Image 1 (cartoon, rainbow, N blue to C red):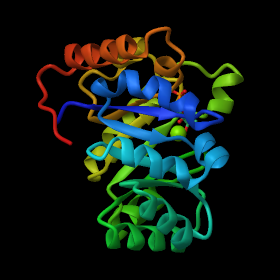
Image 2 (image 1 turned 180 degrees about the vertical axis):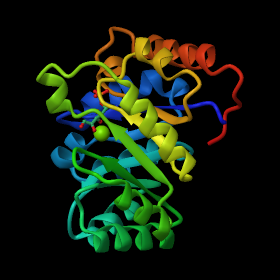
Image 3 (image 1 turned 120 degrees about the vertical axis):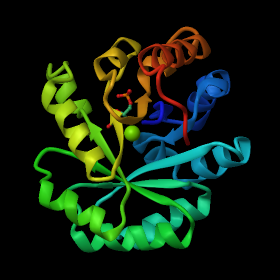
Length: 223
Ligand code: 5RP
Ligand code: MG
């Protein structure tokens, strides 16, 4: 079981507000996420600029594709993304076409599992070749007070990993949440606000990496 990676989610209203914490935290970040909010506010230009500044980092464009999958995926990959996200509510044909476009660009798809997804869908996405899933705590649910990660989340991660998924955990993840997942096959921890809004984003990201090391020390890192 490889050691989890750390992904920084940049959900800001403009590019300068994303670049400031990113430049500081970058040495401790494995994957850069151009967040949904930044994609909407600045468009694929944000992906293009971040790619030019960080040519060697893995970049996820969190475009949350629900429709027009081929077009949106092509826009993101041509701007320099390595991975794009698709919502679990998208039609099977949308997930398929995005996966095809991803393959043409040497990229990958992350399926974001939101309320109502089924194991039947999860089996279908694996059948068509999708390798990554995001176990996601909704920002809106979190705002309504659903705070804790529970045993159902951990069971889902184990079962998805058994199916062959690399599983990402996202949604208000703070450094103190990392220990909850010790021994669970997490591929990536996404953190946005906990790093971006810290007074010292580099120190916050370093703390995350230290917590990952401490809780998953038996595991090797593997991109
Ligand atoms: C929100 C998202 C965010 O990118 C994700 O939740 C990570 O950010 P944060 O740690 O601030 O929640 O996709 O829907
Ligand atoms: Mg996101």
